[in-house]
Length: 362
Image 1: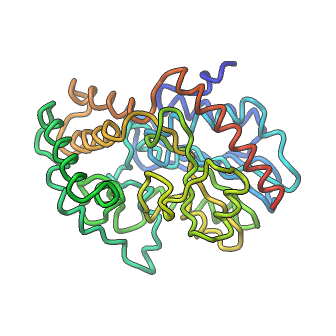
Image 2: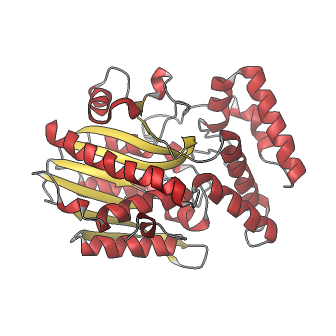
């Protein structure tokens, strides 16, 4: 089987491949239904596969589809890991928890966000204990990121305004304002919401059910859309000088970057899923990272998100323009080429083996 056979053209195919591979690997499987339907009217699920002792003290957790359209990459990595037999070679007292399609609505509909226009990777905040973080600078840019009409001219105008904004306030401040996450404009981009979304509640339920016996956890969340083409950056949001960040660097080496230390193009964000899992498992030492694979330029990726937001807010997904925008955002987050997969898939396998070795050595 070619590595490219692990990847899928749509959510429904990806889900079936995952379930088939998990069953063949002897996994215990749980499927959690989503209340809405997919783009083709299909049922939606977050699927969970567990391999290894249920009371294992060390657990490797992999997550796909947090940003729905990025699920093409993450699902392929999970399916390949199972199909190639890697899950049969676990260290002692170690288990695997594979979470497939953490944002199944976004995966099916070809969106980065969920059914509520929420970026669920900005939603994993403890809303019961504190208010969402403020991002007052977003209000300055919101109006021209959400245009009334979409056309090549509108896209060019937005691109010019973004470039001027970056030139005026600097790259760090502009990136934080636009993509760092905001909780004030529910029709805007990178909206994190004001309460726990379906995926947030579902991931917490999974953690409560499967991870409370673990004492050592490594979380790998599969992402795309940032960095050089095909390169896998490992972004670690643990605080500087913390034990988990030190362990991440020991296990994975120079690929690990820390936004808090200014080592990544990713801004400092709050409410990401993997750090939610850290909060949900206080009994464990949890090393949480996302594997971030580069695709197109940051300008192209950002514009695809803006276009897709306009489409679902004011356009018609099934119109010719809608299909053009869908192709645009898909290309921005999943370059469907052998060359790209040949770069990032073997690296994902290597990283998972490094994680298992790290868990065994901790």
